[in-house]
Length: 341
Image (tube, rainbow, N blue to C red; front, side, top):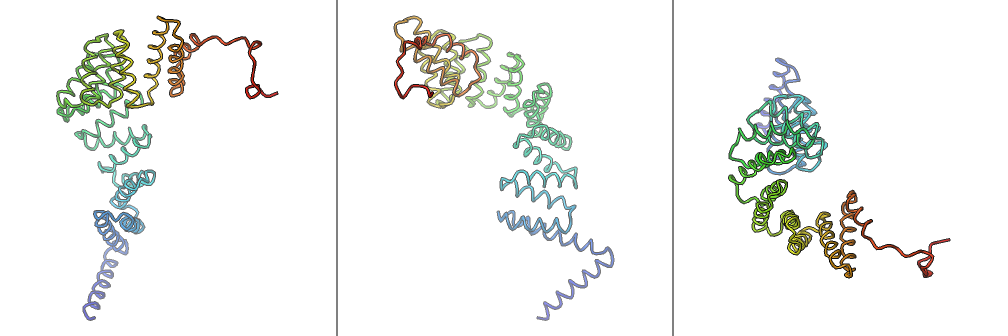
């Protein structure tokens, strides 16, 4: 009992001393620090609700506590409450504009929630604070790519490569930008650089295959796409790409199997249905008596449009090849099929 009284008296004396030398603000600052420290201990133990309560109490005592705001942002992000997390990281940056971690967290959340312009500004701050951070430069490049600013995207990817020349990711993204600009040789160079750093990347082989297709280098395209399928037999883009390659090589039976395999891997591929329709229609035109081939082609095209309605060429093909309707005056309607009066 005596020990407790002594501790209590010591606390009162400390509080009185603090008030004397700096006022109650210093007491609140000290108390807020205690709350923050306890909250961080709880956060390390994944006790998110209790930790959040400690950080909220710290902010109530000291609204300028950047650490408390930032820690609340971490918790809200882990909870999936992204709007609250963005607000917390914004508050943390307002009180500590030099925090790289908070700027990066804010940028990532803006990016994840599709606020790309805001993400660019946050990533720019992060890159200013730490120019040698690979992920900040890389993700800033992705944001520029998403808004269509390809030159800025290239600049950021090149900076990321300078920071980490051994990582394949920036090379891949840079290759995609060059592909968009139809700079196919530059794109091929980047894809090959990425594959040199990590050869087990079937998706990059698919990109490489399509770039060869854009150059009409069909044999090279086929080799890349077949290699991608060997690495990942369930990769739909590889099967679809090989189907297109074989279609252009007039190997229609192989193309059909490729497109069917692509649809087994992913039934939501409008291009695969469209090209299966085109192959069936070519077969029908060679044997016009086989109307089932025409009907199959039309059905493939309809399915393609159901998945992606904005395909004018497919609509034109349907209009061109669909069988002509009989004269309505000669059609006997059943009672159930008659239009309402």
